[in-house]
Image 1 (cartoon, rainbow, N blue to C red):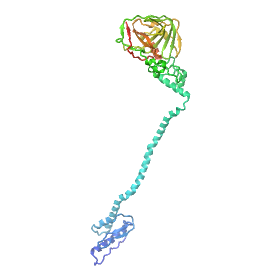
Image 2: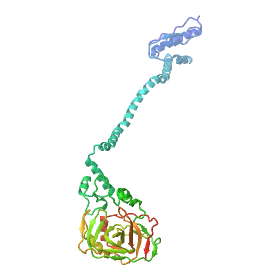
Image 3: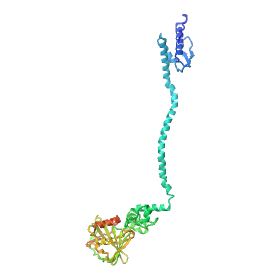
Image 4: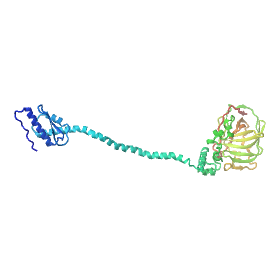
Length: 430
């Protein structure tokens, strides 16, 4: 594009005015050629004697282009118009670029929420969605037992009761019917004593040696068992020679003859009911032998020592007084009297096996040493009746390992814990 030469005024005009007009025309021509001006009004640098002019020019927007142009006007003049045009264009672009951050800040600020919205929408659901299935499953699991309880049938209630009773008393159910109800096998013949009891659902739990109906709860199971908790002369006790009264005592008069009887598995211990005239005379009273019970391990403790088993021979006088003779048993040679009993071993709870005539000689169960301990105590099983005369032989007898194993399989633990002495007198007869 051919640019017109600037108009040169007559010499009569002031020199400064002539220069101002020439440069202004040249500047406008360059702007029109490069397209750097905007449609906004372009201010012409003012002269002291001429009012300021604003000329509209087409093109792209240019903000505050007058300030860079004004700074360019102060630079030394150049003869090359192309170089001036390039410098003016750079000044205008620099001014535009300096305004872009400020001008772009407003639209950018308006778009920031839109940019943040996808980020919020992406993260929040990702955190909630995995938790929803777990929460629903937990709620369903927590509510499932509560929904099942109101709809439980009578059979289910009975099964729950039997399971609870079996858990409290240990091992298998007592009868095949109860075992089928709780989904277990029937109890083996001669199974755990604690579980072999025929108690209807809702009835008080039978007494046991373990679980909820164990020795600590005997006094609360039935009113007639209250003495087990409130009695002051309960058995068994721990005996210490240092605390016992040492001295001579009357000899025991024991008259045991070969007899007969029966052996019963009571569900808690092995009991031998004795028939015949087997008597004990002590303290001027004659007692007749009624039964023999075996405990594994021994309930008594002598001078801090425990024993593998014990046999309690229970006697009763004509006026109803009770006397118990205890024989301590430890591992050693087999006992002939024990063999006579286990030969006719019952095969189930409440099973009773008769002994042959003269098939039971309990004199072989007693030691040769006549020394003994003597005190007043109680039965060691409910109802824990007190004022029982206790005689414990000092010399223990022996049973074989096979005999101990047999009783251990039948009754792992059917011994009552030790009871307080409560200031009772214990005699150590010499």
